[in-house]
Length: 222
Image (cartoon, rainbow, N blue to C red; front, top):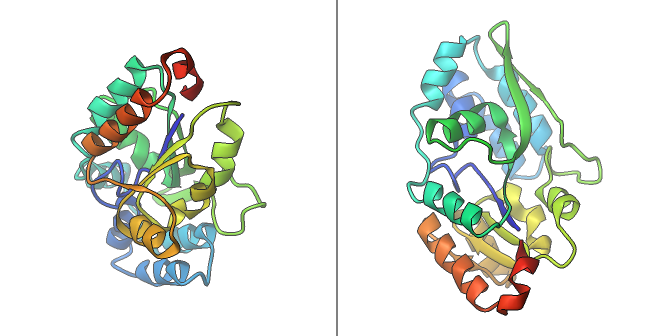
């Protein structure tokens, strides 16, 4: 089973952070810095960032979102997962309002997405928390908790990520692929991982894992 972060992993840049920065004229940088310093949790960070945004229209919002790109090799990876019957989930502590838009822009309809919910109400971004679990004091949508809920007995868990919001997923990954902040953290903490630069690298690592699995047990990883 494959679980994948979105911002900075599927998308080439952190869409959520840039969205808040752009529409708050940079004022959202302060709660982001507090979150990175572990002074507030991600729900507080997102709430404060949304409160600092100026009123916007839906067309302004989607025009901004449409300026972002995803990893060009991700659609091929998603197609590979479908062919191999490997469940692929997008797990994000960001917002579904831009994740689903960017996936649809790239012809990726129907991928399971678990994220915080964002919507425009009278020109203001409103956020709700459909996946929040108080057992995690750091995240609005804890990826570790979601993996534990979704994992099938006997399955191999693959996690792909790049950032601070991915830390809770580390204990749940049988195969971890990391870059950026997450890769640096794993190096410093001695956590085994496979580095990647694009989803072409991810596909190669997953195919290698498949080749190491006995043919009669191949179904056990899906």
